[in-house]
Length: 157
Ligand SMILES: CCCCCCCCCCCCCC(=O)SCCNC(=O)CCNC(=O)[C@H](O)C(C)(C)COP(=O)(O)OP(=O)(O)OC[C@H]1O[C@@H](n2cnc3c(N)ncnc32)[C@H](O)[C@@H]1OP(=O)(O)O
Image 1 (cartoon, rainbow, N blue to C red):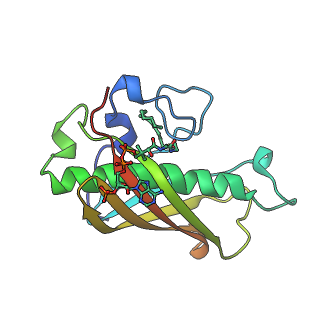
Image 2: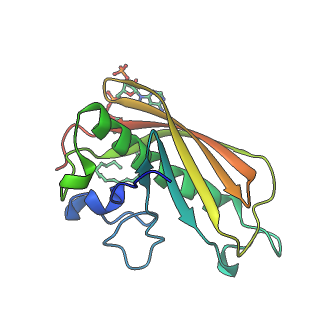
């Protein structure tokens, strides 16, 4: 595997790092971590039984929220690449994205207790708008796909 970046969410400034899904400063949340690997992004999460839909499968809200947070993290990573920001040699990034639109297609039941893998690919960047295509897989089977339009905040304050 190619070298991974630092986790994008660990590079958000402290005041923007409280998101329930991915904020490093939210001890109650999932603390999802998105890494840039080559020209893709990757994140992992293993759901436990509190996220049950039917016994043995994960409820769709968790799937959507993982895609949401991996999507904004991926958008920030791709924006940094486009702006020549070196993710390995910085403590914070001046890029923070929020979700304007998220589409999720549920392709197969998402199994409980199995490590889920999220992959993000840049579709396009147009000004502050960043589109990312994603998959969420378990043991190599795609359980959901996602498309996000993330908007780069005008400033981080
Ligand atoms: C959460 C917001 C607070 C921010 C601070 C906390 C940061 C940390 C938060 C951590 C969160 C973690 C992650 C989460 O969970 S984020 C939580 C869920 N997301 C939100 O709550 C975001 C709510 N929405 C907004 O705040 C604003 O609408 C944003 C910031 C998104 C844009 O408003 P802004 O005034 O900045 O820009 P603009 O209105 O000129 O739009 C810009 C361009 O985008 C286009 N466009 C917009 N929407 C759509 C759409 N649905 N489909 C297609 N296109 C859309 C628009 O036409 C325009 O295009 P163009 O005319 O330039 O071509």
